[in-house]
Amino acid sequence: MVTFRSGAESISSFLVLPRGRGRHGGVIALHEWWGLNDWVKMQAMSLAANGYVVMAVDLYRGRVTENPSEARKLKRGLPEDRAIRDMNAAFHYLATRPDVDSKHIGSIGWSMGGRLAIQLAIHETRLAACVVNYGVLPADPADVKKINAQVLVNCGARDREIPPSRVRDFEKLMQAAGQSADVKIYTGAGHAFENPSNKSGYRPEAAADAWCPHSVVFCPNHKSREPQGPLWWRLEKIALRLASSLYDVDRELHGAHQRRLIRRSLQRDQVADVTDSGVKKRNTSPACAPPFLVSSRQTLPCGCRHHQLRSH
Image 1 (spheres, rainbow, N blue to C red):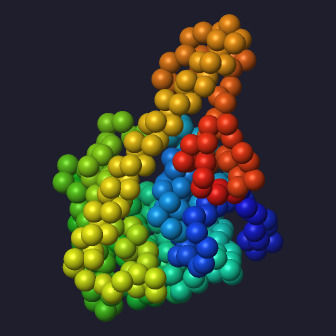
Image 2: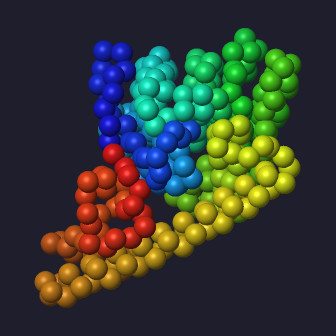
């Protein structure tokens, strides 16, 4: 976690750094109404693994929930002006880092965070790219005209909160303003189809396809990349899909390795009852910390690839 100023406040957010030296594109990740939970941190880590300096902003000041009623209260209690101020402060923080190319900073969000991601594009004209995952889109032509960022919108054809008709209306507003938006509407998908926690609505194939273009959108003309072209775009998408698959496999291996370490510890302590969901009895703690809790200065016994990312 890092701390920076937002107006008169000091706020904390989750920062993940990529491997390699030099300047990188920056991404501001914005959470759903649940708060800055583990899933959002995993998305930040995935983006960092693709070469971005990623900041997942904690809009709720440390509060996280899995209860829909509590999440609704947290969302309603979030002042719009404070959220915009926090996002602008996050942009300034990334733009002033020596390892970030300030001309290539984008935003990404899911649901509530998707709406805020496009709001940042309205209030910060230097934003280069914006990915809206099933978030409410602006309907005011005056707001749309302020957007300079390249925009990607991912939504589900069965989403009742953000129906496809409203997405198409936004696309027309962008066209009328002389802008373009890449809109993807996934058949059979509803709201929050990218999050596995949404057990009834999760659509893994649509989620994987929605994830692949992020790198292209965030940094389409970066100096270190080859000139754009249809073939390059296809190769980039294939490479990202492969990276995503390898990441999922590595995560499963990491989980199995973690459970083995726990079992060994339990055998020493003569405690049993371990399942895939974790340890059920007290006095048992994993020997391998979750990757999002690992700082660059820590050395862990597992040595797995997750812990080679530098998170703060």
